[in-house]
Length: 313
Image (cartoon, rainbow, N blue to C red; front, side, top):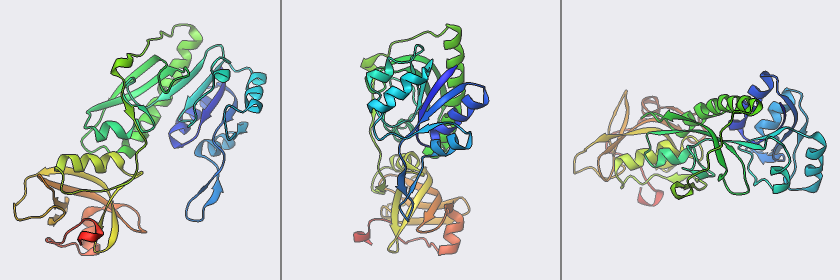
């Protein structure tokens, strides 16, 4: 199929790669402009731009996808379908109406649940046991178009948002290929969304962990935000990012929230307002992520020390 691909972050790369490997004619790739990144704030291309350039594909980087110049280019290219995976801008009607097979979007949730900006983080934060991927025929709303295909996946107790991101990216690529195959064969069935069941996942931001809360809520916060944007605490005046943790159970009434109860090979046990939290992976400032047990040995974590906001140290 003759395709224009639109995408931006790493999540979209497997879909672009699979389309290329399976022989689709990708006549253009549209992505966000180069942005300042890293400590030096140097301009850098998006992950999709890098992959497209590696594959030798034509790349466009408009500030606004609604720009008449881009719409004109797309009209001249005459794609059969436009494929969107985590592109990052609303698509105007002038593009939605352009391809005969429509604009097909890969969305990492079970629509109509978790429309919006953070569909991967939201199910973990909410304590859901499953999520999935939806391919959708786009309309002018925010993730409101007809459902084409869906596939469910379980959320394991040790899955953080990074784990789920990688699994859903690969699943999305596979589901996209199946969607295009059915579109080409004329066998796709469109299912309107039940808007009464819709929920929205707003943009997530890094947070400081509140150990005064219940241990299961604290664990979901850590796992739902790891590794990006992240959940952190402070230990001896320095920031410590928490990547993996799970609710562990009760603790002695004498322990204050944020107090380290014990240290072992399984991790660092920290008291919460209700129950305790077993922290199993952390990232000290300026260092890579590591097992909590290794961190405890190298940084001499001791029972009785307290983690939490700087003002309370």
